[in-house]
Image: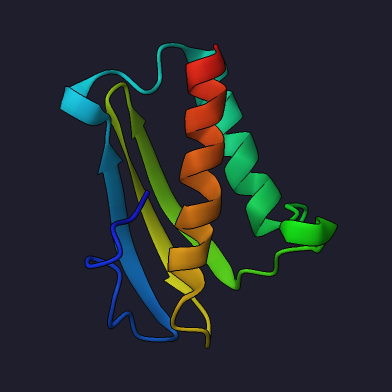
Length: 105
């Protein structure tokens, strides 16, 4: 999950390289099923299928331009629209949900 002090001053209508590594460099993608789950969650968020509190749709205003999944980390190149907090909300929706999946598995 993005740290609050690292997610600031993101400009609207700008692309950003976002990456995250597993704790102590542990693997976060053990097989193709984990990669598919992660990419499925990204697709759901990008298409607006994700739900927030009160079952409200989450509209994030983020585009995925490129990605790389490595066993112990991932890289995303995201473009946010006019909302300067869109990437922050996207990452706050993506990473805890995937972490719950990974922990349960």
